[in-house]
Length: 209
Image 1 (cartoon, helix red, strand yellow):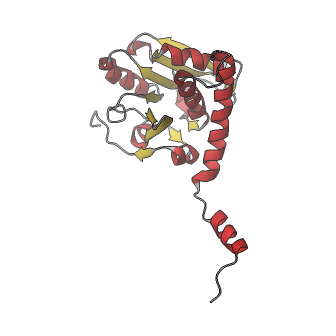
Image 2 (cartoon, one colour; image 1 turned 180 degrees about the horizontal axis):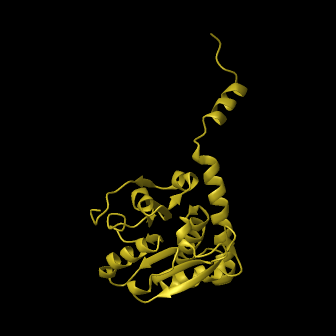
Image 3 (cartoon, helix red, strand yellow; image 1 turned 30 degrees about the horizontal axis):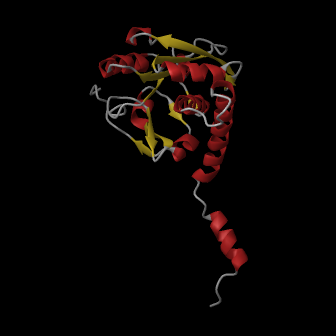
C-alpha cells in the first residue's frame, strides 16, 4: 500500500484539528483586541504590555460574551448587564475602561463596586478578590440568589461554589470552570468557552442542596 501523499496528510491534519481550535481563535481574537485596548488606554505609553489587572478585566469581559443567563436574571430586555467587583479595584478600573461605550449581547454594561456581600444584588457577574477570604461564602451565596456568574482567584474558589477561577500558570492567564455551580442556577456557559478552559469540573454543591 502506498503512503499517503503530503497533500492528503495535510488534509487529514486539518480534519483532525481539535474542535476547540476555532473557539480558541474566536475567543483569542476577542481577548487580544481587549488587551490592546487596555494597553492603549490604561498602561503607560512606554510599554505595550497590558498589566495583569487589564488581562483579568479582558477575560471577564469575554466571559460575559460566552455566557447565557436565565430570563429571570434580567428585569427587562433592555436591562443593562451589571458587573460587580468586590475587592480588586485595579481590575474594576481596567474593566471600566474596556466596557465603556460597549454592549454585550445587545445590553449596555454597568460597573459597580461592592463593599460587602450585602451589595451583591441585581448583578449578572460578580468578580471577587477580597482582602479577607472570609467574605467569599457570603458573596457566593448572594451571587447564587441573583443568578450571577461568580468569578474569583482564590485556590478553593470552585470548591466553595464559584464558577470560574482565574489562575496564572507559566506566566499565562488561564481559567478553570465549575459547570456544576453554573448549572444549578441555570447559567449556560458556551461550549467555546469550556473548550478553552484549563479544566472543567462538576463539583457538588458545598451547601449540600
